[in-house]
Length: 519
Image (cartoon, rainbow, N blue to C red; front, side, top):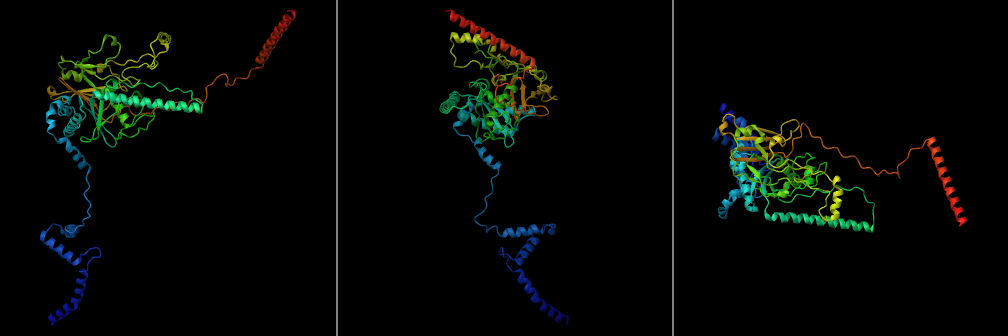
């Protein structure tokens, strides 16, 4: 009976089980899957793998089962994997590690034009400065590629300037012979454009004259010649090793003067306009070039005696500041301990930039096209008291001990790279005026590098300059100036004086009439 009853219950439950199985075999509206087959595959996967904590990972296993069904049935319209920025950069840097057969013959020439960047990186690492061994190796290969591409006579790593979006790796090189003509050609073209604009303005004024302003802008300070002063070297920049190098334009005194009055971070894009007050005429490439000139003039140093004054200067140019130097073959090196203790053992080997924005002062009162006639010489003698006094900066190869303090702090800080092994240490010099500028010296070897934001130390805070006072609407003169009202006594005295003048005129007229009658 129990068996019959049991059979009766099973026969009663079979329709329900059939309906449930039919429900589980129903395909999904989004795919061809059903719950029965999915649970079967999931249980088979669990029994085969025997994972720990099945309850915790059952959802992930269910997802893997579903994903495994679609691996071979994917659509042909698939999303390609996006290439990351690191992969793109690595692809661009592949050319740095490739070497052609023709380059083997030019290795000796490149070694003479390029310094040993790996050795420089080793010494900088001892000083606690630098960019890392891997990046220094990539920069060395990028500099080698630049020398081969531009045929530069000499090139060195100047440093790295940080930006808000990207950074600038800066390379310093000497000018080639053809660069001077190119630069001069661009300046002449700009001068011709200015002359054409002036002629057009003059013609327009003749046709329809307009009121002219009395304001006269200050004379433009001429740019220093290529290969001299602030334009002694040419600079190339790139964002990362392997990316194309970009040549920076030459710097003008106006750009250096404006860069001294602003405090602005770099963005990493050379074509970005520089929005500031006072206004800076140029984009970020010009601003970067001006800051490089300022940093080089203040932080490029060398051991005393390594360089000596050049012999090209004649006796007639003794009054002019020296702008050339050469390596001293008799230099034997300075002890590292002495260089770490005394700033007198370091000297500046880059010319100081004057307040005029140039390394050599130019008299703006004398026009470049004036003739040397006797009359002109006589006029010059008369105008000598009104001429400005020539500005003179510190001479070349001046010791660092003569540098001025920076907001009551020393301009330089020197130390040994290691006090525990001083016999193998190097002398390290750090600039407090331009944070990020470093120099090291060891025997006859030395090097300068800058790694920073390209900004000068400004103390606790930076205060922008105050705008100038507005100009007067008109010039005050006696014809438009309102006089004070006279007092009663002054009016009577004026009245008496006028009466006396009238009486004297009448007497003169009567005398003249009598003389005419007598004639």
